[in-house]
Length: 197
Image (cartoon, one colour):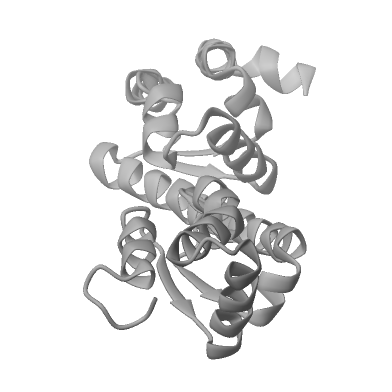
């Protein structure tokens, strides 16, 4: 189980590494797994059965979760579902933090490339994270898709008004074309939009 080149542990290390996760095993967890395998009464195949039954859901759910390490502990062996739920919540939180950082990086890069500062308010950040998670997209890809022609519209607004800073809220994420269109229209009729505000 532990020391041979083709050992079960090495196989699982390679399998999880393919998902970007470093897996390690505590000694007590290995003892519990060996005991469970012994009750299978199928020799070495029992180990394979026990490992697969325990780690199958982990491979499926943790891939792409944002987690980079998995420590197989006695608690994980005894209560695999509870530990998986905790890890999923932790991974979801880590993923959200990475996506938030990605949104801010996109705004910064957009500003550098186009000389137009975009700022995502908290509602926009929250909505971007929700969409990226729901649509399983990277933040860079999502923002590039949502705001693909924004530099042209915002440049027009800059030409009309001199404005170079734009704050985006959740409406910009939910309906980016309408949001930009409304901005452009307001730039042509600044007095009318001030009266309506």
